Length: 352
Ligand SMILES: NC(=O)c1ccc[n+]([C@@H]2O[C@H](COP(=O)([O-])OP(=O)(O)OC[C@H]3O[C@@H](n4cnc5c(N)ncnc54)[C@H](O)[C@@H]3O)[C@@H](O)[C@H]2O)c1
Image (cartoon, rainbow, N blue to C red):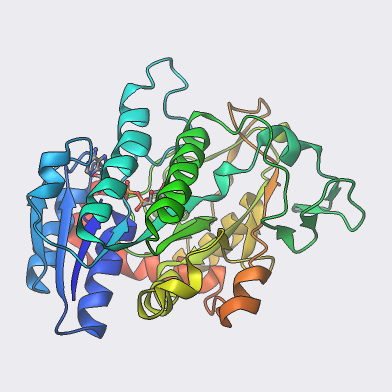
């Protein structure tokens, strides 16, 4: 089996590439990446060590994809993944990579009669509706309340039944538009395309920064005693996200590669869920405990573009469909990232 991973030098792609090689030894795994993300170049020796072929290429260019040769299956992980991207007015890279690039990937798969897993995002859910959900505020966090007016929201999180007819950020818009076109491709050409809408993904080899990769950014700031700030929603650090360990996403990817047809209808939410959710205040406590460095973040009450108070993934559809559920807790995630930073000189140079 030949598997092509686009964006495969990034956090998600490189971890999946290596784990796939470990589990499917005879598979030929190729990674294509333009190394746009700072830090992705550091994964190249690791990929090489595991016998993974690297192509420096760009999903915006169909010829680069064609240079990968024939493929049986693609995992599409390339993206400009920051929700803040494009907000300064220049959306060209975002649209050309996340939307046109995904379409080029779909076309490449059609030509190869290949299946695809598309790593989509919870950010496809509209901001207006997420902000209209009823929220319960406690000392350390926000949560979704029991009684909701909107469909697809409960204390367990946001399900695939959530309304979609409103704006979702430029980033979320590119991913949602790509989802729509991938759905058209799979229906028109009977291709096994799978769409996973992921909440926050986290784990070792994530070169986190202020606007993307919060788990790695937060624990690294603790290790190196760098200042942190709670931004938005009053500046108290009560905003909540769920986190999914990359190993748990990999478990899902393996199940889907083995039986693609089973998953190539509709979309699936995949995330850490209520058990794997954490507020920034709670994250600060966990990072303090694991690193041994207690920090007191500053506060900026002003809410940023596209920010939301709570997002928790309700993955019950996927669980009922496949039995998949995440196994690793937020503490496991932070401990794993902590150990990676302590052991990896490249990570230390990046975060210091
Ligand atoms: N990290 C998360 O929390 C999260 C959550 C939900 C969904 N996702 C999705 O998961 C996927 C992977 O995200 P990630 O967190 O690994 O990000 P990442 O930035 O670590 O990886 C993306 C990779 O794509 C590459 N890339 C960017 N533009 C490219 C282009 N034009 N051509 C080829 N390669 C290009 C980058 O160099 C990078 O290596 C993305 O599609 C993202 O939307 C991520």
